[in-house]
Length: 621
Image (cartoon, rainbow, N blue to C red; front, top):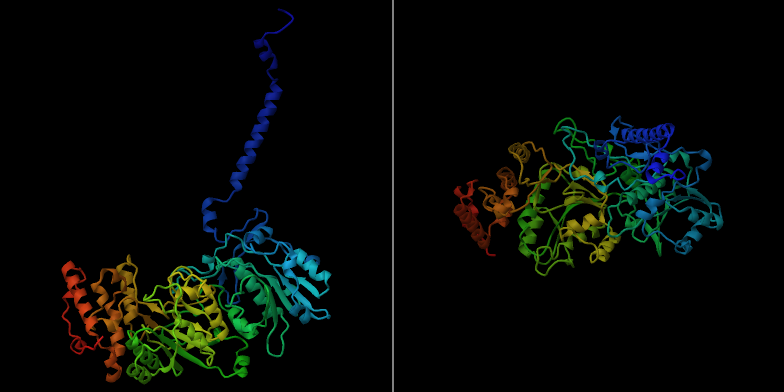
């Protein structure tokens, strides 16, 4: 078969030439070189994890890492940002981030009918050429306003934070307050280049809204951009106010734009006239609890903190406007169990040197005799109607703890420093009145502890609380959880201001010794001690009864216990008589000691001989 070729011959005939094989090999070699180069340029996983909180979605060519220094020469952390080459000719073109608008602003309008200009805004702008600063507005929205010739629109550019930037980066659970190994710092939230913009008659912004997740960094960023524009570029009236308008399906953050500054609401439009000096002071504080609003103190514990560091440059204006009134306050309701604690608190406040009013809110559960003792201790007493927590079970300990909302009705005062009745004050706390609402010490995660906090009374804020109490979920079922949902942006005080009497279950001997040293230091090294667990007046004075209950070991400290009794000993005997044990509580203490003895608890406190004279002078339950 000469004419045709069999199958094997055809295979041989199809074998490529040597040149073709070389070309194929070169192609494969080039491919592997490209892959290798890509892997070589890829950031290592360790770098990724180290900077995960501050990365942005951008390529290597488009990213650069910013490290800035503040005016005091302190290094400030920065997030990676998209590098933008701003062109002066494009200054009024907004810098849109489509993925961010879709991902976080899940309630932005798909139809521009929803953004129909409200009547109050048309009246405000009039026919004159007003300059309108527009923040986080879609290009179509800007065009619509230009078409209707309502004024000169100025789109404000800023780089949006990304999903890698988490709330916990701004509000970490723990920071090195003592600055033993590191100086706490905050990541940078990108802001516009304010020098590029002139004065604005009105600042208009569209806010993202997610009622299920209030801790949204982008939402906070938009608020901060607007607040900074109001302070730096907003035209002010004779009353030091400027005009800010939001479009939002949920209320703008009361932490920056106070309830009392809301002039009008129409649908999803909110018109505020913020008081600039107060807003300016808020912006001068750290952007989150990642830094202390009040540094621990100066070079030593006896140094007095320089309050000019936290006072607004417009403080003189605030003083001229009205004579400020300030007070400490606490709340007693539902039982008389904390009467002794409130008496001791008042005495400790007066011993600290304060001359501020002491306001006590009580309900009808406090007898006339106890009221007289509380007044003698220094409290000015106001009787309130309790507020029920709608999410609490009937008869539960937290059934009426929303009564604390009544503090916001003390509108005769500009500032209130609330102090829980299970606290004693060891150092003067008057400097806290220089801080805005909400200023407090940290608790867990991104939350503050409401045991000591600065608040600003407002009937409007009280009304918002009452309207929200059925919908807002408290993480702990109490007022602290509710307030943490209403004020997610707060200012961090050192833990020594509200020093919690508790220990981690895995605390080392050195950690326990350090904390006990702070509890007992004289002169005091902490401002106040917050007694968690069983309260000192409900124990024998001989030792901390938390030692007798295994579940309460984390709250046990004889040093802190004896510190409370030292304040008690300085009180008048008549006031001391209101700290007696009840027959029921004595029975409970003896039972707990008996169980501790039976279990043979190694701390051995059950062996201590009781000498507390109150044991023989009991009161009826």
